[in-house]
Length: 324
Image (tube, rainbow, N blue to C red):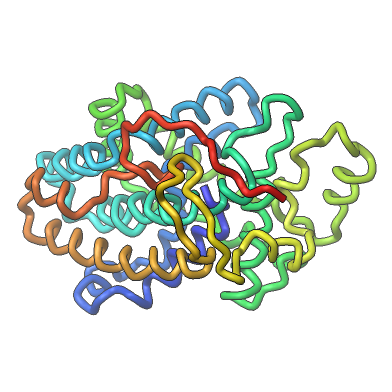
């Protein structure tokens, strides 16, 4: 990831960084904020069905680690060939949405993984510490950038979208591009359904106005609920502070010890905003020109994994973690 609310805040902050021409091309920008959930929509689709969820998590990892540039190019080329590139939702999904989701992940995920461990559950304890940290980051972003009390704010309202805003052309473009790039059949309808299910996911698992879900997970289920802290937003704001690296300690890319940084989560977030705004502005120029060249897309879109921030297709293992 990071978590859904962190991406939502990013989408809203990104708007302030975009140039005037880009914003004029996106008069309904605010209505499509859920698009920034990117490939995580595969996780939200039928999330209550464990078999479906686990299978789609594997598909999501495929999108995170492979053929990022190729997918963006195939998507835009398909939209051009079908005459749908002029549609606002088609362009908003790929630029400010999908690409920006991937970019923020690629910039911040290495730090999150270094501090919390692998992005997957611990195979022995089954604890998902990575999800716990990302949940805390959501709370931090919500309260820091929006001034909202994560414990009481009805956060699910931020993830509602009108069906009328989603064109059939968008779903077809997603569908074709996923199949052409990853041989994922029926991906478009999965995304379409997940667009609607996201609000329910946030209401069921994240919103916890009275703290009852937290109490149930922590005190009733106890040790058996090993991943419960990865969900409810009814958590204390200060719990995230150890994972932000605000003291700028040295840390390593979790997959490559030669990549060293002292950047904090906030530093990385603003770096992603700055670089992301440039990419979205330039991508919109390309779309407006109607000329989709592979070289142009590949030179603009960094071919990096959103898991470890290194080159896609690279065979890596998570080796470097902070010793607490």
